[in-house]
Image 1: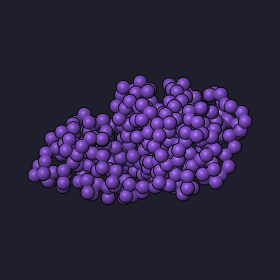
Image 2: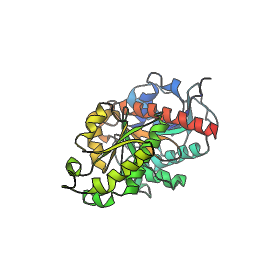
Image 3: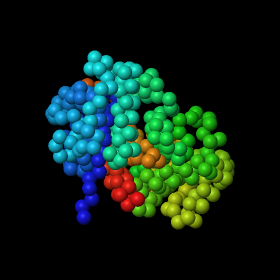
Amino acid sequence: MTPLKPRIAIVPGDPSGIGPELVVKLLHEEGVRDAADILLVGDAHVWRQGAGQAGLDLDLGPVELGEDQVGTHPGLGWLPLDTIAPQEVCIAQVTEAGGRSSLRCLDKALDLAMADKVDGILFGPFNKAALTAAGMDAEDEHRYMARYLGHEGYHGELNVLDELMTTRVTSHIGLRDVAGNITPEGVENAIGLAEDTLKRAGKTRPRIAVAALNPHAGDNGKFGREEIDILAPVIRSAQERQKDVTGPWPSDTVFLKAIRGEVDAVVTMYHDQGQIAIKLLGFERGVTVAGGLPVPVTTPAHGTAFDIAGQNIANVGATRQAFDLLVRMATTHRAQRAAA
């Protein structure tokens, strides 16, 4: 039996950035509308703005869709919202109105997901300054989503490039504070997050490499004992539970293993340890996953790119990668719900 296509909600991101343009370009990519039933969530004028920026057609149709409908034609529908006035959209500018629109569209998509109306969410790039100005009461959109959903379990940001995924033990903290925040529980959580997310993306037995914190993986304690006292015991415990986890590998060589396809994920110790590698390997293909949430959520890893907004030069590559990964995750999510 052919599995049903997943239903994907797409929100434009900050209307002042490249998100609306990218989503319209995505909708014209080969195979996109065949892979999922897509529900655009947001203001008509924002979507039409994106179509104009991209120089492409977008027929939203005259019919306002209910939340339980699929679309005006196969594969594409629109749930209209009224989140921002046309005159409030200021291309390439950080505005409270843009942040407010972003949050309202995201909230509606999360509501749809929790009501089982959609199986996953893709959002265009947000601007954190605009979100904060609009009252986002969280460190970032990932924590905002968890709070909005009432999710109290472990969650975190994962970064994906093609078939390689990274997650990290510490994230948005000062570098001087990293070592003190490397704990066995934190390492176990990061490994578990990578494993669970990879399984949702279709990997039956994920191969996970753990990066060391110190140069040369500590060189037997010469440059630090985190590898001996924290990382190695956690890795041994994972291996005893039949998980394919190895390390700690020196961070200046672990990504060589990754690009050779020897591992599916790298668990890093701090933000830039993985981000620099991923962005050097393919900035325009990177994807961010909101891992650990009760619904699959992805977004392109780049930002709102105000410097090129409205110029029809935004590269759709990362948005397509985010869509393709979300389809895989949403398909698994849908099947799991159906079997429950």
